[in-house]
Image 1 (cartoon, each protein chain N blue to C red):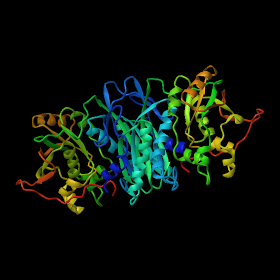
Image 2 (image 1 turned 45 degrees about the vertical axis):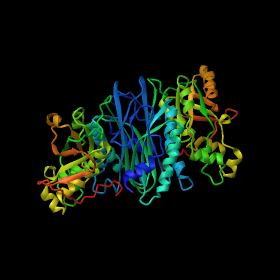
Image 3 (image 1 turned 90 degrees about the vertical axis):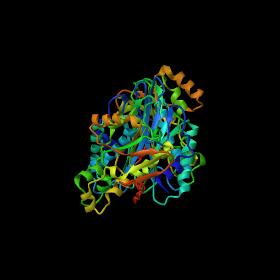
Image 4 (image 1 turned 30 degrees about the vertical axis):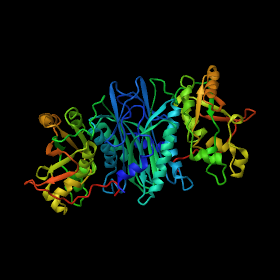
Amino acid sequence: MTEFDLIDLFTRPAPRGGEGVVLGIGDDAAVLRPPRGQDLVATVDAVVEGVHFDARFRAADIGWKALAVNLSDLAAMGARPLWALCALGTPRGERPARLAGVGRGLAACARAHEVAIVGGNVSRARELSLTVTLVGAVPRGRALTRAGARPGDLLFVSGRLGEAALGLADGAPPRARARQRRPRPRLELGLALRGVASACLDVSDGLLQDLGHLCDASGVGARLETARLPLPDARAAARAGRDPLALACGGGEDYELLFSARPDRAAAVASAAARTRTAVTHIGAVVRGGGVRLLDERGRAHTVRVRGHDHLR
Amino acid sequence: MTEFDLIDLFTRPAPRGGEGVVLGIGDDAAVLRPPRGQDLVATVDAVVEGVHFDARFRAADIGWKALAVNLSDLAAMGARPLWALCALGTPRGERPARLAGVGRGLAACARAHEVAIVGGNVSRARELSLTVTLVGAVPRGRALTRAGARPGDLLFVSGRLGEAALGLADGAPPRARARQRRPRPRLELGLALRGVASACLDVSDGLLQDLGHLCDASGVGARLETARLPLPDARAAARAGRDPLALACGGGEDYELLFSARPDRAAAVASAAARTRTAVTHIGAVVRGGGVRLLDERGRAHTVRVRGHDHLR
């Protein structure tokens, strides 16, 4: 099987055309027409066998996850996705059916989010990997960034934290396993937060670590109220021998949106959550200084032993 | 060393700002402002240890080559480069000095071609690899493609073929080794060929195989005159035990431009070559039908045993 056969096998199921695609896969490069008056938003992320997925993943889950983690980055910028370029690394002797399965999962995620696959590359490698570059659009100057949080802002997070990490445990409930294998990027919420959130990022490394990134970029600190955190199911966590709070604070791969908003925008946050049918929880506040403090129900400092998710594990 | 330290180590030397870069590395995604009235051109390519480079490559050569092969794709479209996103795969225990060296080579190539590195990602992997997605611009509707060749068009190629493949041989001359390790994308020639070439691609898989791609995309055939081909140095090829014609026809990784032009554009081709100080050779013609025929000096069909360069080798 040649490189061309493999690229075809792997990209055939995907939507290859769409908004702004003048010339798609098949030439030296794609030709793309950017939407007028918009900025582009671009990100790259890879999923690698043994790091981001293992033998428990179905092939289609791998393709889905590779695109979904990039979509989550665009959600965090308030951008809508347009075009993806995908580079597959595959060992000699990998089963064509598995590569086709990866392509089907990629295609399913692309269709679900109206993304055109406009570039493909296949290289020999020692383990299976899929590197996706995703380009989207946002009205000029309106991208959400990590840098706009100010002391006094409220902190919010979407969905439920720690479930994806729980999904790696043996005997994890199906819902947690699905969160691990088929993350659902919060694109609609991200769009609804433009002009509402003061800063935003997606939780991929774990709440505390990512909140630290938001604080660093904004030059502020944060106070989290542990009693407010949307924890994973306590019984499922207990069965897996994991602490729900530690999972929520450091589990990683949640792909939820963590954002700040001025207190007078609280109603706009609630409205964005309702319009996009997304659970959004008020979890704390932005403060002066630096660092992240956890407070228990009585306002006492709380220590939680977490290890930020390390994509280099 | 965390992922963030590694991304910083690896992207620090690179130019991170430039035309249209509103927000570069450091947020969930880059924010980019496309130039007005232009189409974007986008491509992705990877270099992998043991496939595209080996222990004889210096670290900086790896970084240079990863970007250069993408620049060559943009050259073939007549586009000028703007922004690159780079995903590094690195084994546990890779020396930081080697990763920094890859970053320096990437930065050198980016500076030489005015490319901003706007995205970075680092993942654990079993071998070193660098996947680059490159975005450039071309005036709307003016991208060169593989599909415009018509019977009667003349065929041209830039530079000298087969040298990069020769550069892999033991005892190869320094010039051939440099061609293999530090390809020089023909960006200026590509720009000068807009409105001049009828079809264009870059020679990465070997002349015959890539000419086959051009013919397939254009629905035509081709006739090559072996006596016209710009062969690698005969003595160096002999020392390496290689046939110069076979190297030129199938060596691969030349990263030269192969293009067609109407006969009445021959003077414009010569002018583009002169303006960009690029050797351009007339090597044959486009004909009706399909397939590529090689003719010797007396017009007799010539058979050459080549094996197209296989990036999956």
